Amino acid sequence: MARRRPETNWPPPPAPAPRCALCERQTPLLTEHHLIPRSQGRRQGLRHADLPTAPLCAACHKFLHVTFSNAELAGEYASLEALVAHADVQRFLKWIRKQPPTKQVRVRR
Image (cartoon, rainbow, N blue to C red):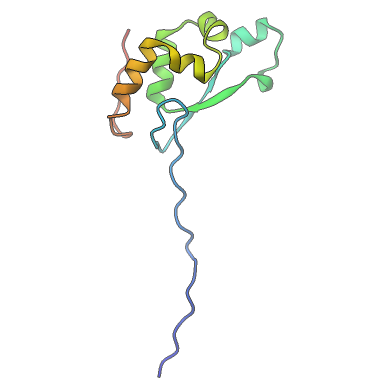
């Protein structure tokens, strides 16, 4: 009777794709969005490393910067909760969640 090889865990299972903090889709690549833009943070006397960030997919990141100015992002929308509460963002999230993560999204204002 032949010997059985022991079960192995090699190669390790692939890690799940990271999720966008705004639309919660699994995408292969995320960008770092500064909740307080770097230009505004410098004006407030904050160091670049101390600014809060959130991992976003490219579509959500583009949408935020097309929709809001840096001053608005630093003042009124400096948290994910404040961003999600905005009506335009809610409408965009409702649409983008139905799109496949591989789709190239063109964001217009």
